[in-house]
Image 1: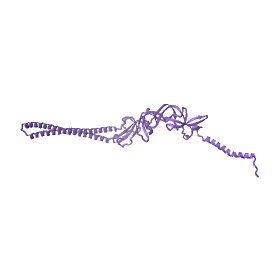
Image 2: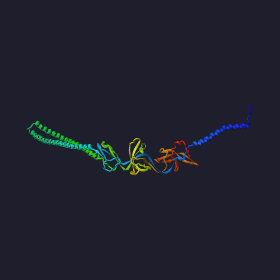
Image 3: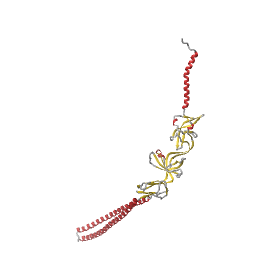
Image 4: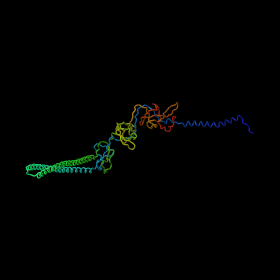
Length: 420
């Protein structure tokens, strides 16, 4: 027979049942609290790179790149068809002004010059013959005109005498008319001769002008050939260093082909390129700095030329340096360029970090202290003028604020991060 449990036994049973439910809940809660502490976003302070907002001047720049090249680089081309006989200088050799670099065989050009000289002599002779022929023709026409004028004078006298005879009845009207017709015929013939003389004068002048023009052209060709032969001496036009020269003895060289380059390595300029997006923001005369050497020393200069065309998404421009003979400058050295587009003497400035994505609004993490804890707090700021090192803070921060420079993309959805 079943017996009813005592009150104490029932209480113990209820406590055991309650413990089965409560204890697991307590354990789960403790684990959750502990895990939550472990999963809360945090950063270790020794891994943080930070910078402090300061007051100071800033130059806004457009970033570009460039190559150091000699300021004066003379390209020597062959002015005539020639052949290399001897190489006098090699790459790296120093040369003085007027010193020969190569010996060229220019016999072909010399023969062409001799032929031009012969052609000029022939043309001069032809011009003399033409002048003699035209002069004789004009003289012949002048003689014919002079004779015809005498005939006209004689015919006029005959008409006058026969008119008197006609008036006295000694001559018929028909016979008088014959004399009158002859006089008119002689006048017509004189008019034709005068017209032929004028046409001959004009034709003579044009023919002689044509021959003179041909002579002038031949003379210019001769002068050009003489000048080209003189240039074919391959003498350096300035003091410098040979940076390139044709290497093969006996090689044929075409007219206009480069045979050598001589650079003055005592001064330099920079040939630079910039993205085409900045095409309308750069102009001749704009100030520039170039970072050169191991210490990234900044050399000042200005833009002297901008090419109007775009090549491979870039615009080319040339920079003249104030210290064009600086010791750190070397040929073909690659340098970073900053084209200065704005300057501010006083502004809030901050060192550039991973947060920088261009001018305008962006989020940064600012180090804040609450009690004994430090946090990186997401803060909205507006960036202004920038260069390769610093950026202007237009709003969102104050002088003395400490900003995290690390890449914080993994924390972009967090508003604050514990700094351990």
